[in-house]
Length: 227
Image (cartoon, rainbow, N blue to C red; front, side, top):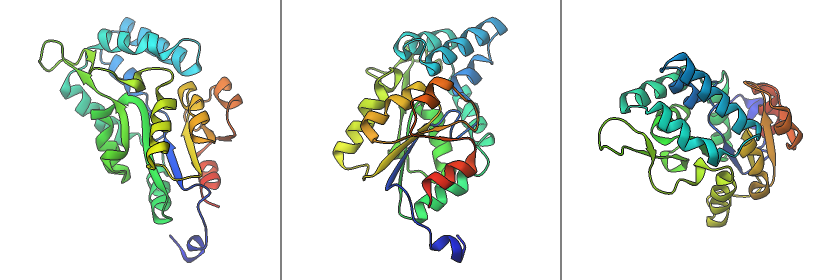
């Protein structure tokens, strides 16, 4: 940071980021769906949009998407690389500047955790601060076709629950903020206190309506997080 930047201060003590269409400009589950035939890809994208817009419950579609795609462990590695290749320009620098100001960052996502961990490393976010969905293989092979036990972040209220747990445990200092693009991120506002709708990748009107602030790009997001 420059000498001018060093005089700046953080607006929040903790920032919780969504991952897909927020830290990275792709939706991981849709990316995986595109590895299948056109019909499956279209079905997955439609289910994702319905869930992110809040038109259907994530609970209704998450396991269905996984069962239809049946991603392999190798495909998750490729997805990790795609996440990193499509990091929102300026996001890496923003996270670094937040850390330099002593801000705690975390990722709370409905994405697949194994695919998100390399992205977190790229951004400088510790793995223990990445909260996402773990998958399982019903045949104990390379195909991941089911949720691994109880996965709260595969549900519409999951982010509310996880963020509340982090706050109560002291893992998130106050004041805190949630940054994301979807209905599940907006729902977490009740646990974290403030919600910023990041619309630099996709803009969902209902999500913006539920937000305290809208950040139309990385510069707008920076101005809301660093004063």
